Image (cartoon, rainbow, N blue to C red; front, top):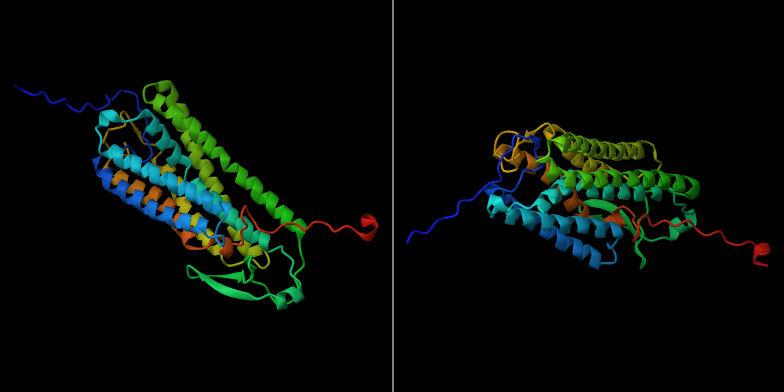
Amino acid sequence: MTTKIKPVVEPPSSTIRFPAPIGGVPLAHDFAPSVLFACLYGLLAFLGFYRIVRSASRSLLVFSLLAFIVERVVIWSLRAEQARTPSEDFSRSLTIYWQITFSAGFLMPHSITLNLMRCVVVGTTKGISSTLRSSSTIKTEEVGGLSSFVNTSKTSVAVPRLGHGAQEDQPQKRAMYRRIFGLIALQTIVPFVISVVMGNGYVDAETDATKVSAIQTLRYVIAALALALIQIGLALSIWAILTVPRIARKVILLFALETTLTVIPIYHLVIMTNSTTSLTSTTSGSQNTPGEKAAFYVFQVLPEFAPCVVLLIVNMKTMFGTGNFGDRIMDPKKKPTDQEAA
């Protein structure tokens, strides 16, 4: 009795050319790197949980970064699983998910970096009297090879590097800095929203030529907006270093992280011209060739992984003076006068 072997059927190629997916689709040679990055992000997740358990390092920014890391553990695990399955099992939902997260997900580390920059800049407006400065016990704590000043009281407070004498409190300038950084932070939401629209329409463009142009335009818009937002972050860090009085040199680290993230949207703009007639095509421009996959890991995966490592190795709360939910400085409430009290 002869047993018939069911051949693996690939999705049929069409004459419609649609934008090649970012990162291609998981094929057999993607299994090893997918497992590698799932494990690396998994190790980072343990470090993130450690930061959350300790009150000295726990903050909303750590929770946000940990959420991104856990999401990356999931996505690389799914890609590892997909690389071991027949091509006929490619999921429409996973294709949507990958295009959304790869097109705009890297903006999460950018958003965290921007918030850390806000904390440092806002911290320069805090007023400190000469009496308080002489009586406060301050020590230098080495965090990942970098110095930060930490108050040795029960509630650790990062104090900016200052000269001797008093420092006048600047509430108006503090409010201005918060408005500027808050407005810029809101703009980060726009690429995420557009990526959701693009991702859901991407799978339809595979079989509908009328949607190809719109999807391609949205991809360009996402990449351009992401690049612009990161450039704004770089400009803010340069502005802070050059013009903000008493700014801490740790902003240079944030500048380096933003520079690393810049690689990703530039890479996206470079590959946007590529198109394919099938998700599983291995022709040049399909983003499935070994060279194109190597470029994806070098110019997308590593640049979004490196900032996560740095931000968890250092203690963000003490190094950048963050509070549990943002910059730790609260504007003091106005004390009532004797007449008001009466």
